[in-house]
Image (tube, rainbow, N blue to C red; front, side):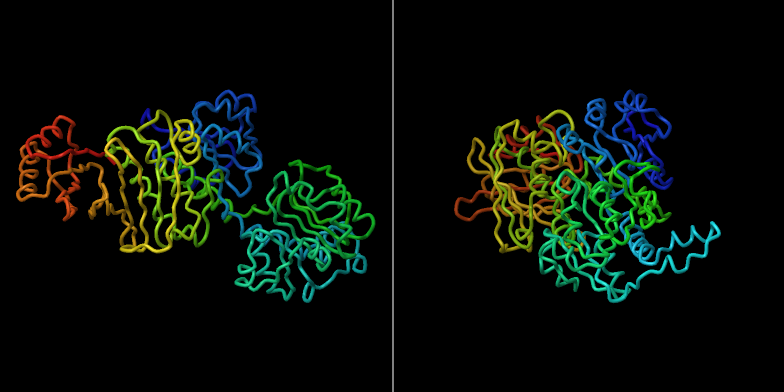
Length: 532
């Protein structure tokens, strides 16, 4: 193992496939499953990445002690056990595995709905204890009943699909999902959560846990519900006010409940455990072999991307890109970073104000993630330390860098085009790029406002000169004499002032001394060497 290998601490049990993947990527992996809190706090500073599940609390104190930490990976969906704000201030990326347990959680929700409809665990326990309580545990059918879903994320939608298969009427409430999406999913939309409470025979909660959702299902909520309602929570402990639920069970307003998540875990003395009409499980929503395998491998992949300085799509503290937006925007991340790197390397002196223009289909979407990628390229070789999607905005602000976005719905020559414009000592400077083909290979199509067409490479040079006969020969001859091989060449020129720009990709880098020699011997106006 290389001494320079980045170190990953796996603090809780993780699928072996995830650990093996990290090792295959060249990282050194240690496990700290039995570490005490004090030992964890003392040693976390030795690691570049930390992987946890739900038991480990990554507090502000832990983040302060983790002096080398670059990424925290949560092998699961929620990150309420991570101080994301403190991590963001330190430039630490927080990633999770949001799709790893959605199927398992949805299936568990359906199982809990059926269990509290038919009193299955209570009847099972009575029979095991020698009691034939057939009459006591009579239940209700699901067909024809109304299921109210509060929170229509991925799990909520999967629950809806399965409930409709059971012939239930499904009504959902989520103010952040547009009406058009409900129509696409063929779901009934409730305009208010009160509408759910008034209509639903069963209510299942699928909200994230935060300051706004803590205690969301309160005394007032239960008062608004139908009598005899059944309530299921497989989301997060504390979203349903337990004292309020206990009172509703006592009064008979709630006929039964099914609870998988608890305000304090683990627990064996929660107030709800005393009620026979509450089906209780110890946070089993994600506890399937398949979900644990997915969580381990997905979080390992995300951590590896973050440690390599690449964009981790599941980062929770950068602008979120999902679904159709991801399909359209993600292929342009690399070209945006390249445009940022190219701009600062060809600029004549320091630059601090930039205009980024998005043309074409991508202009219809939230392009903040692309702008962050441009900023990452602009600052990549300018500042000391790590530059990533989390801290790049604050680094730019500290240096007085100003960025403005423009969007134009139609691109003239390309499906999508991205242009970065600034002003240096010589005047306006702009570079443009796009991607080509089904694999979205990055392409530079404008440099110094001149049309070029060249695939970016690690070693490049951009030359400006008078467009007169013999210049290409002079440039090629000189580079040959310097022992530098040209891999690609593209020339853009203007007819009016007969100026030309040549873009070159080189097999080896050209030194500054050799570049100055090329300028002098070939009669160039100027030239810039670029390393991407």
